[in-house]
Length: 371
Image (cartoon, rainbow, N blue to C red; front, side):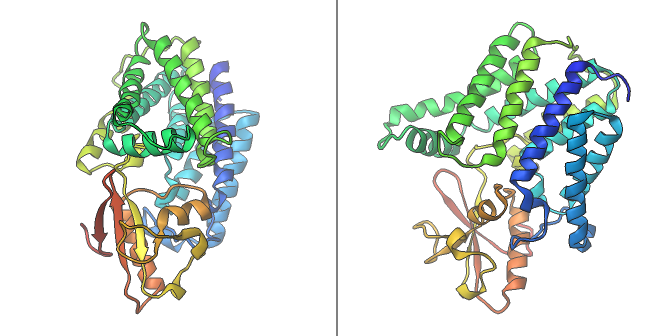
């Protein structure tokens, strides 16, 4: 393997550990022994046998273990191929942390020098924070994550005054500015320390001392603290100036240009850093015949005044209870799931509702349509 800098080597080992732990925490996502259907990105993967899914998961875990022991370019290539093929078989596998880790591995594979690798990693991290902050400047985040998750569930507030909610726009603005600040020498320290503090807060809120949920993202948050510490120390002194290289263009396109198109509905939330923003809708299934449920009713049934049926299957609860992940938030995936539900439960009158936004806008979707 061509000369990895010691810091790059250590980072790849931490990446292998964090990535592997996230996959273990969501192991049913990578297998087919589950009631939640596969939603293939590529049609040819629909014919994959169950054994192939298991084999890809096992191959990835072996590669991640080897990555922790001694990073090698051949291991990175095999890992990238196995993860890419596995993700093509199911949209839900393309989680934000999966997408992030794959790009870090790609940068380490395609770039020959430590400075080039560090440059791409910094661009990826900076773009992630910029758009993550940008898409939090939204009422969905203020009334959802800020009010319900932080103020009510974590801090135990029973009544939230209106003036306090105005501060809910501040985290997104600060995160966006901090993301940009990572690119400049004068602001990198302040930005990195702010973002480290933000991840510590996230771990406190989501961890065992807080609401104790979504533990699949805990390793990612710990890894991000490590990455920020590396950026803070600047052990590689990488120049962030773009060059006329295909590798630079790919990173800039994926992490700085394409996320803009999420504003217009042409790029998915999970590929745009739009995390906890509140705009992503949640799918609910209202079936007429409850005996047709392909899932434990105790885990997935939910009643809500906003959903026009007595009890609905919450796809969010279904995915969390069975695979420990948030389902991929996209109408195209919801329509695929609706089609699979109808195929599994023929002859019943079901309808499918997407609820989104802080006002809980309700939209009925129709399987097999394009809108």
